[in-house]
Image 1 (cartoon, rainbow, N blue to C red):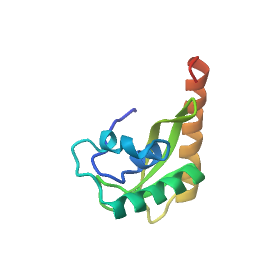
Image 2: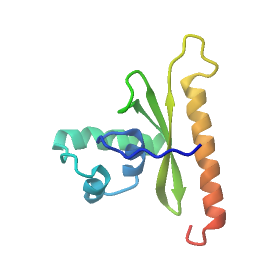
Image 3: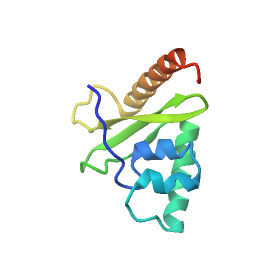
Length: 124
């Protein structure tokens, strides 16, 4: 199942992964009608974006559901992130997979999508 959720809050994991690939001038387009963040918020956000770029994933509390952690990995098109695959993670009392295992699985699926996009896109 494919779902789409607009990034309504500055700092949403999917936005974090995407902004790690884009310049500051693009922030107003990413956050829509929300307030422009303060310099301190931007500094914190870009530190997290740099970390996401280096690690290949982002992990943050869900902006939509309390108690849920969003795990995101970039889907690359050409030389930049075109989208982010984000999945919710809920810590269970008897989990089948650790959060680290789930992150690896999210990255594997994002990499698979990236590969399929690259194969079918002459611009990539």
